[in-house]
Image (cartoon, rainbow, N blue to C red; front, side, top):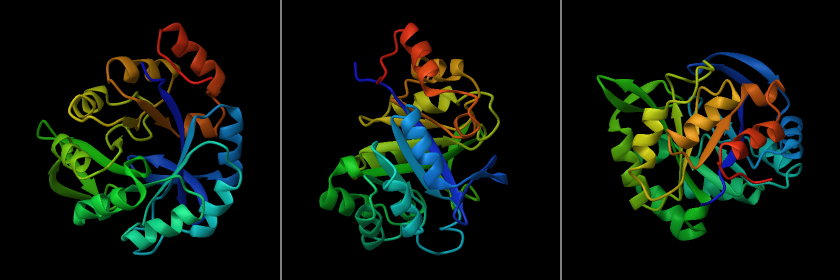
Length: 251
């Protein structure tokens, strides 16, 4: 069984790391490069940096921020937000990103996933899916969770995988920032439907939540922000707990 990954997320707005609830009420958490370096040294397996206002503001991801973060890391870095073309992705990969994450652009032009996978390999292409339970189905949202689309999470994940995405970054809008635990039904529905790894995101508040999402949710990786930024959950102790539950993790 492959080792499960613990990922620290940096939601960046205006060059600063922020965190909110249900994608709103943002508060400042610190400098991206400083936090990324601290998390990597502390035991994070990977770092995800999301420029959460780039799409809303119709601008590209801040390359300088990505470069500053990448220079501090020795673990893989995924970058998303504001990627609208293959050239945008190329700029971020050239700046030090190992993977690029696409959400709104992939929904608008799914063939972009295929073009990027053909150019860089599926391992460098992540499809980000923001979903919320609506009428007993998991609806997909674009533009940082502000716009509901006609797509459903499971169907879109399958299509994205078929088009070349190598990984799914699955965020529950309903659980984001609540610390009530990951959305295991959502995660399990997607993870059992696609042949590529699924990263669970949204709702982490305790070590036990990670156990739940790896077992009940069938996640391949779990991502969190606040509990890592605030230092309330050290990576080593989390990995010890997962190991005790027979969940393989990287040391």
